[in-house]
Length: 127
Image: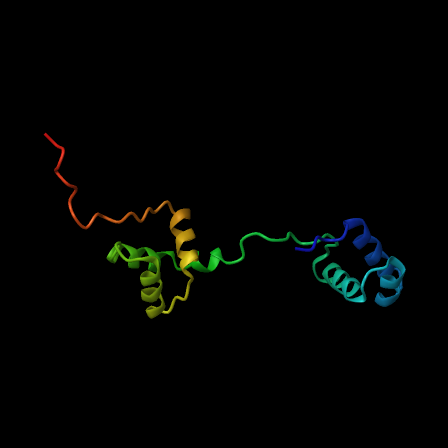
């Protein structure tokens, strides 16, 4: 993943543009791409920031968290379902999520999905 260029460089490019240089001139002077100079200046004009936004991190959990009630309801109705089966049931209700997203959802909410044994334990060896 590429890293952001320094905040100092961004500030100097934006300051040059604000002082009257064209975006391309400022980009050439500071040896950055014209596209970067345009983006940095746009961010400064729109949001007043010259620093880069944070990179990485969670981008999607808010979408699945918005449907937490439906996921819990589906799980509580039939807790023995495998994740791919639960995913199919949720899709029938209009929610499209991945199996790994469901797994992370359950982990975040502290829901353990242990299966109950199909047969009782053996009594051999007990006295």
